[in-house]
Amino acid sequence: MTRASGKSTKVLEQVDQGVRVAWGYLSLEPDCAARSQRFGLFHRLFGARPQGSAMFVKAGRHLVGAIVACAAFVVQGVVIYAGLLACAVVADADTGGPLAGPLLVLFAGLVGVLLMPLLFLPASVIGEAVAKSGRLLTKWLVTSAIAGVLALGYVFLAAVATGVGIAHSLLASLLGALTVLVPMALCVSVPTAR
Image (cartoon, rainbow, N blue to C red; front, top):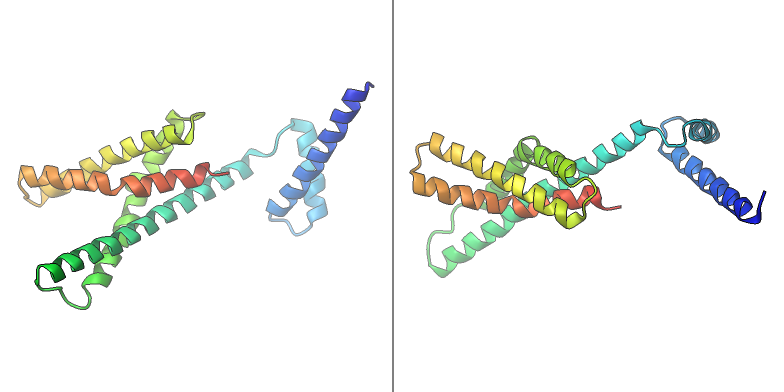
């Protein structure tokens, strides 16, 4: 055995030990030593870590991204209410009732929860598939474009279904597409952060 291969073998053993310990913490079994031993055997046999854990980690990241996107909708609701309240005070108009702010924030949160399976999930899955090895900016652009188109379609269909005129439907669709851009960017940035 040469000197270089001896060093690389030691490095591989240290990496294997570190991976076994990390895998032991991620496993749901109570005995850390048994988990490390089993993973070490799996790693030696197949040369990779089990795919199931990677799937759960990725699903967890997407869940955190969706929660961050919902929180962004709530923050947008607060900002919109503050803007509307400022406009009402400046224009010396009625500021609304005491429940106007909390109901607007609650409505924004419900919209965020509703859009998780209808908008964020399809856009992030398609964006990840298209920009698999791309940079974060590429994923942001692709998923934002998909989310914008989906939001445009959803808002337009809702506006037409409620009998709103075509000009107002187009304006509402544009505002809906712009509203989802920041939450979508946040949703995408969380799963790609390492």
